[in-house]
Image (cartoon, rainbow, N blue to C red; front, top):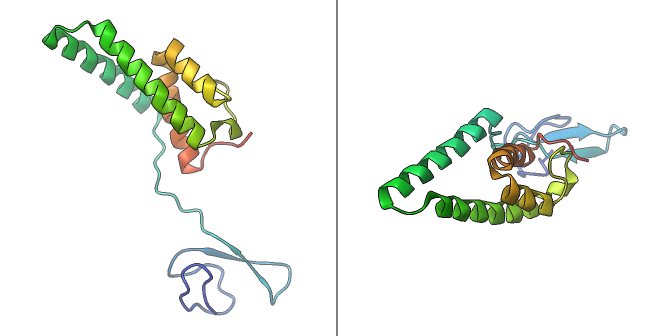
Length: 141
């Protein structure tokens, strides 16, 4: 028998390919096979505390850069908020955030508006939530 995913030879009646790790589910008929791709993911889920720590780190970097260069820290923070809101909008659209259960942002524009209005809360939440979606751990709506 041949694995339908990696095309390597495997034993007849195998449940899992020893070469690529794909699961080979047996259908109701003993002769016919239903092939199911293995859901191995290498994407890490960022814990919420790490996302909050990253947000605080960004704020400190902005403060120290502004202090050392003489630039107004409010201007730098505004630029960071706008750029991160644009990035989050594109990312939320790409991963189709509206398909997943969320108590904070149910649509892409909610993510962008939340970033612009309350960045310090929504930014770490979105980092955590998007990592769950990309790892396949988020619940679909």
